[in-house]
Length: 200
Image 1: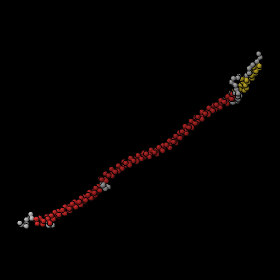
Image 2: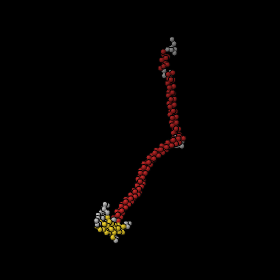
Image 3: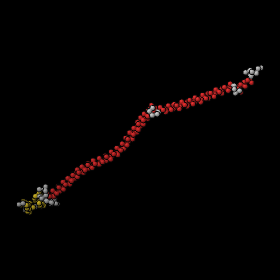
Image 4: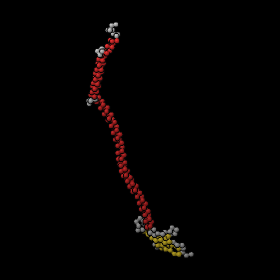
């Protein structure tokens, strides 16, 4: 049996244990794959950062991305601020308007009430004064017309004498009165009244 046969155990062991054999060439290709993977990773990272730089550059002032974000943000912020400011302004204006309106309304109402009160008071005062004055005038005129005589009896007849009155507005007054009695004759004698017992 020849010792150089590829099927002999010695050759197989020598082939597996020898670092310079075909197994060693497999290790070299693994290193190449690892280096290629690291290079690809490095290229990926470089690409990522370059992409980020390009992306960031797109949003710098004056660029389209910046203008787009600025306009959208500005418009949204302006609209939100305008709505919030309008609502707050309306509420503040309503509150201030109520206070101012109440104060002004109170003053206007007070003045109007005072004017109406003065008119009503003057009217009531005039009516009360007229009634009081009228009553006083009637009382005074009646008293003057009756010659300031009091104690009149409406169930007994009187013989009275009339004279001119010194009171303005009262032309005549009772100068004298005589209580008429039964069985007495009364008659005019000159400018006065006379009486005499009635004879049977």
